[in-house]
Image (cartoon, rainbow, N blue to C red; front, side, top):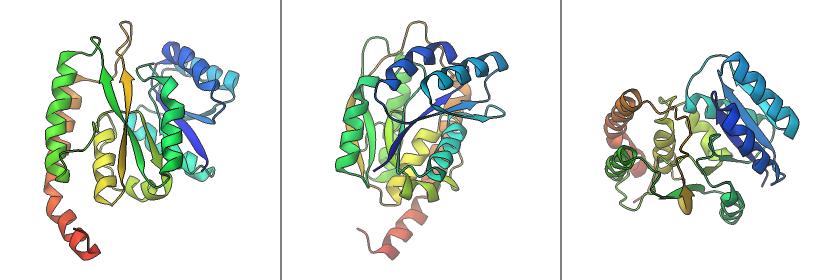
Length: 241
């Protein structure tokens, strides 16, 4: 097992500076994907990466979280890494849980490990409601009422089964986190959830656009529901129940 941490980053240089210090303590390779940040922000992100000997890769234009992660996956796979731990650059995720995620992945190297978020009072009510709606649709799309929160961006991917899925991904922004989990599950990848605390910093800058991203997430659920018959047919051909 040769894991790497992938951090998608768009104009989050200031928040990422403190996150980077904590990441460096784990002595794990880190890939930072600069997703089309402004020139000033990019220079800061690049300097942070240089300070901590992180890999720095950049998308010339902002393509969204999904586009950044796909770029990061391809870079990681090309450089011989077997697993990718995804974590946000804004400090929302509990960095201290990284060892737990990696240990769980080491025990289950073929499985996808995803955070089961524990929220505090900082979580916006609108975001919690949106997650409940998505949880319902994910249950419909997988026929599995025990599926974890597919919107949690703290996770570990086994790259071998994930790479073939990337060419089928339609969502390049926030809906990416949902789509790749559903498609991995439908391809037979087992999913294990790990409890983790999630906070929303008071001074945090979110790139979640309520209308735009909610609209695309809604379209994604329509698309995934339309694919259910094809998934079931493939399951029959593979002899799965």
